[in-house]
Length: 427
Figure (tube, rainbow, N blue to C red):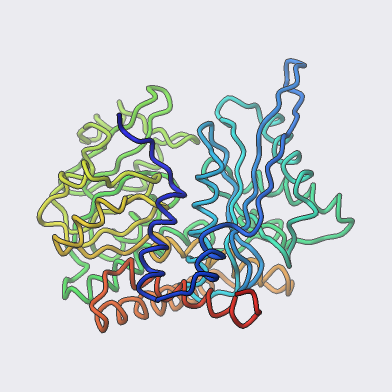
């Protein structure tokens, strides 16, 4: 019988391996292995048909030694508290590795927004905030969008929080539309951040970005902007794999001479489903959902969900792949990591590669709290600087200490959080 994947167990295993390298004492290990706080609650919603449905919600605050907790809110029918715990843990390391003064948090609701009307979605959002309003805030915990949540959801949450708090607090939530305190550049930030790290990794590999080929899993926000920027820099994306909500299955859309990201986006609906008929007419080959990983490319970018590069699927990674940049959270299992390490594949770990989103969220929070907003070019310049600096710090440690990139990133992040905990007298 195959053991069910548990993201939090994986996060703890990753932490334990690095804690051994850092020789952390028992107290700090125990503190950092587990979330500081968890909120589990129910959200009753009167549905459009007059019935009342009760949704389960969560907010997990893993660690706030370096600043307010930060992390998205996911709406997903298969959401579990262990997934939320894992993502909150990874957010702690993500904020630390890019050296922004925030801790890690994550939230979720077990629901499928595909099957909820806009009014029902609004009720879920406002109900979530009512349950945690005392435990979030600009100086405590700052939520943001995540899987199947969007800027509109954030506005409903902001509005509900401000009604309860009795004032304007735009810094309580990030990922908002620009018209109500969002930051320019936020839409592009995560995908662009992935490519900033890929660009730096290619430099270290002495590979020119011009002519580089990539294959991407996913065609949501992260994948879309990663593809756009890589193409803009002179590379190409020969395949993207994404979920088809109509068929309840994934497909890979392949084009040997490179996809047109704008075209694919023009035939993608609001749930991320690409119109297969239009894609075929435009010369795209429709393949199995897992075929993205087997492409003859230099760069693979898993940018969908966790647990995608596994002990089984890693066998399909082409021998020409030099770099894997984890646009998704937790896409590679420890078993697959061991194989990639042995093969010499340069892995840019998730909490570094996709940290552009939280970095720009931090920028949004700063702008909201000061009521002074930056032009887009400044946001993206600051993002590039932050991501490049973080990548090079990790890569330098990996080179100097002979460490795997993931381990080096963890070593920097965990040491920063551990130091903050020690200075506060927590352990």
